Amino acid sequence: MTVSADRIKQLVADGVRDQVYPGAVWAIGDAAGMTARGTTGVLDPAEPDVPMQPDTVFDVASLTKILAVWSSIGALFEDGSLPLDEPLEGFWTEVAGHPLGQVTARHLLTHTAGVPLRAQLKNLYGTDPATIRAGVLHEALHRPPGEAVEYTDRAALILGYLTEHLSGQSLDQLARTRIWQPLGMTHTRFGPLPTELAARCAPTELDEDTGRHLKGTAHDFSARLLGGVCGIAGTFSVLDDLARFLRYMLDPTTAPAAPGFGPNWVEESLTVQTGTLEPVRGLFWHPAPGTNPAERTYVHYGFTGTGMWISPKQGTWAVLLTNKLYYTRDRQPLTETRNRFRELVFS
Image (cartoon, rainbow, N blue to C red; front, top):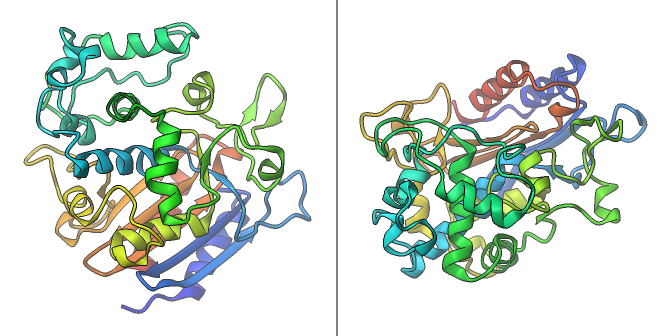
């Protein structure tokens, strides 16, 4: 496979020209490291003389589901602490006797749990974190488990709570000690960011309360409501850290120290888990649009404009980080860029 870095550079630059996003940072690579990388555009249109940099910090939004939740669940699974196919009420007293108790962790990881599709916590359960947790864990199901594949952020929120129950640690502590520190991901953390890191952060959505674009504070309302830490969103990261994470997934020997999850969890997750149900999914990862699931090119996106792909079969990974949310919530323009980016890297 030969990847044209020049064509990728042009594609990503065209996105700036067309105001799909203010700027972008991207890289492709394999287990040995990066084979090509680039930056384009500006950090903030309000400061047109400040370009995007390789170490720009991004609100990676739903990549939190992979970097913190999926990886931590994998660590607990490989520890033997989490049975994927046992109803949750068998080992989680908080949900015993409630509808969620009949759901399994595998249901949640494949978005087949039937939990409510409403994800944003605003105006649902108040503002007290304990009341929010109880509301999420005790609410009725939307449909019976295993009946349909329906993406909902609620699944990641519940799994984040589950990791805290099983580990006795908060989700940010667990992710930091079991995943990010062993992998050398020194710039990955939940927000809000300290001042020095926030200065390097790509701004996202306009905050109506302040009249300024969010910078160093999670765009996701649920994450902000819960103090910055939740399974849905709230993580900030940089290109180099994401490259470390993906390289490890391809080759565990690339990590400075062994994180909690390993090759068995990666193999299980990057395999179709939903049988005849569609759209097909692995465990939180899903086959990249336009690819045959048998090719095993998997992807996960973040609402702010981030995305990362991995193909064990080709031994290749890719990252595209943008702050498209600065301009719009419309997904279509970035979807076209993402699909073309994937074609250039993996086809």
